[in-house]
Image (spheres, rainbow, N blue to C red):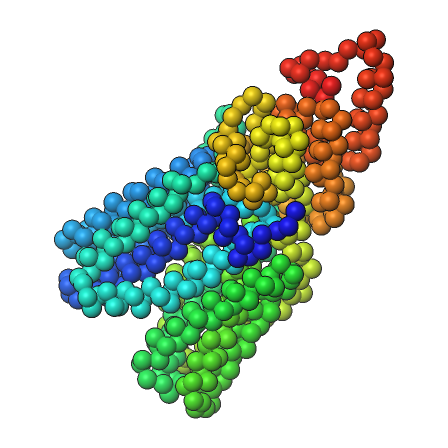
Length: 565
């Protein structure tokens, strides 16, 4: 079956809704950010302490992500998004009536906590909306939108500030959350995580930490991202000092921010064309190398007092934005490819929260280094550190395969196979769209939410739907978790398995096996059978049928697996 392609994903109804809600609410957040800063400094005449209070209130909830994620992994993502977006709309509207900084900080703290939960739930919903092989393309589209909003949002916020009061902008942002709620409400699919009986909070929390630190690729990626973000924030927090040191006026601070944003958009679009062909850590190493070279050159120019036309510096910053897309697109693709779907929330939150903690520590250290060595030498050191990180990534992780080559458990292929098998049997059986997961359609005679979707929705291989999901240890993860139904001799990128998965189900269905009656676990076993095992089943069935009345088959309801006959 043909893949929808990067922009073709927007033809998938659920992804289009998820994408649209994310873009609109993201734009509103940037408007809100500008309005909040103006309200604190201009209307309430707050100082640095007030600004720090509001900024801290918006960032601290990110550190609670891994602890919130345990609860989020237990619940359907669509329901979580509905609740969090709706409450955020109310809290944002409450900022219209905030009497002072402390009230605003309290509202921002509560809203940011829900925003952190919504971000995690959004990643879980993404796994239930697109296939594993389309995760890189979906990431490209979302990253392109994010970078575009970063350019448009502050500019539009500044324009609206000139036309209306900051409080009115909070009302506008509240409406963007309402729009996001409507988009989520219209979603047909959702995750359906199953909580094990007797499972405790701390046990599930430990599973998330254990998977990240017990998985070689995720552990390495987390270490790399911590190093990168810490080094980047060392110089990024000093951007206001870099511009005058290069001999440019204060207005170029805004120009450089715009240049980075435009470069990020262009880079994301470029990644959309080449990301699926490149190994992720090779891409990341190349991107970090480009950034490191640019930062070293800027630092060298400051130390030596070299003066270059500002337009050329803007071009260099534009190139830096393009290179940053190689990191921002690669990171989520690798995380999703190495994470069982039932751990998505916990793993995603942990992978994002640890670098945030280091980001808080970087600016004070940068201030000390600038005071002792100067901004130019800080940039030289930061750029050199980035080049060393790039070298280590290329040498140690360059051989990791593309995210489209995970160790398969019949998961992404199982979705198409389940759809085709359901069509063969005349029964609407469906697996949810989700990467690296193995699920099966509902039992015969049961009409699911996704069944109604299939009767009038998107093409089978692109539609989404609910269902209990199970995961397996990804490629090179080092994790002990495996699906016992999957033979251990499978390897990533097995084209033979990819091309015969639906054929196996079709063969069984065509021979009279009522595969639609199977339980989820039983369907997973069928999907994992080898060609030889399929042949044995067909042979045995033909011999049973040849015996005629001498041998009677089992009834369909036989719990031992009699549905095969």
